[in-house]
Image (cartoon, rainbow, N blue to C red; front, side):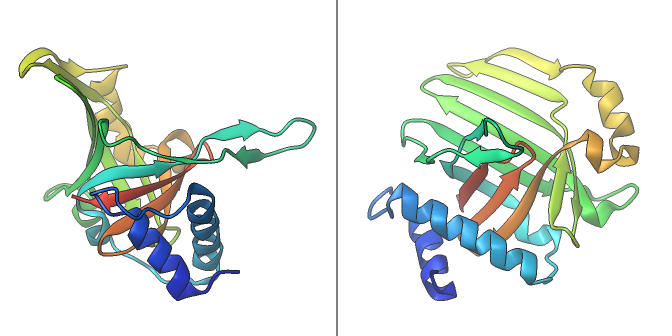
Length: 198
């Protein structure tokens, strides 16, 4: 088992935006899993403030359904190539019900001149460290020209109902690491992700 300082060092090294001196994928997956296990034991609460800002996706693990047994098995994991820019951004909602714990999520994928952005409401539950969200809007631009911008999949109604909907009906990230330079979470589908602060 890796010590806390070693795990943190591995996560911080993996969050370097220049892509140099990155730890091997298997070591990073091990550090993520150990950090997640420790986080479940440590009942430290975090606030939504720790997540605010723009983060670049650095590393992901896929999942594969285990044959013959229940559950999900993690894939090997891989670093996101430098030529593919994937960002997630959280901002706070300043007014309305539960304003301090609610906000907006924006996920943007940039590939050459193509930019795809999905966004929508988000709410943070400090005790389980869950951030629930729903992508309700999409914008597509090519060479700076907007091809589409509007609601998707009944997004207008989903936004109205979001604060009242239960977590079991929403996508979420279960955060287990919230450092100054990096954040890490497990998604509802079971995969792990590490983001670096932009």
